[in-house]
Image (tube, rainbow, N blue to C red; front, side, top):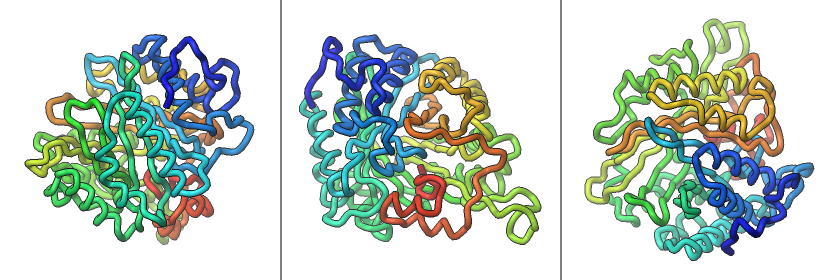
Length: 425
């Protein structure tokens, strides 16, 4: 990856360019200002994003998405997020799929690895931990909806923190748990797998690369039909969130009518009273699962030092106006100024929040030892499509749940409204 200064603008970053790279870069420039980054840093990071996307950055937006990426509902291979905690500036992050547009998962993974290694050479960090796991996550015949995602946490100075996201089911869903166990052990976390709670599926295996004070290894799990009371039991970190805190998080994000003790607000099957399952009403509802993330930093204890919950708020709101109201309430609950998040939503799109749903994709609550709780707001780039507002929650046949083991995003989209519907994103 070639270092590019702000004085040498890329055509895809230039204002008025109707390309995928231009669209995402302009969003990043506006979001960077909200996060307190300098203009020079924003320009560097915009170019970094364009370079990491490769040739698909020059793809005109009037063409379909370069691939059926399940990183977002409309298959844009870019997602933004703001991580917020009290009395601190928000931290802007961008998640992207460097191999978007590749003809297959093998090439997708090779492209992603090449981009990460180029970043390592550019910013002086090693990809050795990732290379040690190559045989586990990049097999000869990979399966699943992704090969590699890359996240950049944008800091002042133009050098980001870097994270890699891998697919535990690359060798098949039935081998995902074994893959996670082997990967943890290779990285020195020999007891970590036994500390993980039960989950319905291993979603991601993530690594911090480069300049981190305490580099983390993270395991993401999907949990179908999860209640707040059940979610509270999933934390394995010392000093994690209490039951009352988790229940309040569920109520705020999923709505005031959430039943936190029975069918969870983000369960695979959740029906309002009198509906579905012989109730004579609408079919039962199928939604994305709640996600948990378990972060490990200490190889000696085997216990996680971090625990995060993610709820797909877009499945529980009529439109993005309602989703933003919930984000505002959640931030206020933790004493965090909601203004940057509200400004960020306007920086990503010019449409009214009430005119669609999905701009605010997830709301997350993170606990990490030695830090106050953090609230994360995930914003979709919406380069290709805006989902219309809903008058009722998404309805899918229960048989669609079987598609969660599909070997490619295309297989998922055949019967679902988006590639993420049963895969956890």
